[in-house]
Image (cartoon, rainbow, N blue to C red; front, side):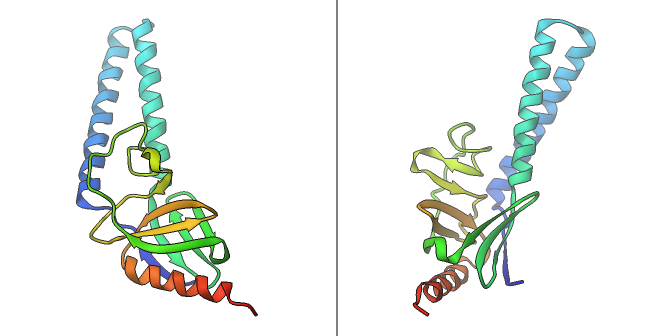
Length: 170
């Protein structure tokens, strides 16, 4: 197996996610009531389509929510709810400890809900961030990934040791 570092979102991320979830449920309820009162109208069709699109984005967020970062003998694995991404040590350019600036996560240019995906113009892939845990900045095949996990300093040291071992000549 390997060492597992849990990904626990900050209180800020939990509150923002809860607020967005409540807002989504309220919008769904409003559209449902409108569908009952005015079935077949163009506004109803638009409302149902818009809510369906928002639910799709919500479910994509849930599928991509990170659970843990695992360091095995061969690779770093980011485990999400329904999938995982593996970074072989031989393909990692560098790993260092970083921090995310605190700010308002926006929808659109900031990935899914502003938490997961390529955010803003800096072309870095980010997971749910928690500065108290720290951020592991990982460059894999020229792309930079920011992974928020517990004991990020220890994770960075271990990754760098394993990168060094894989780059040493046999």
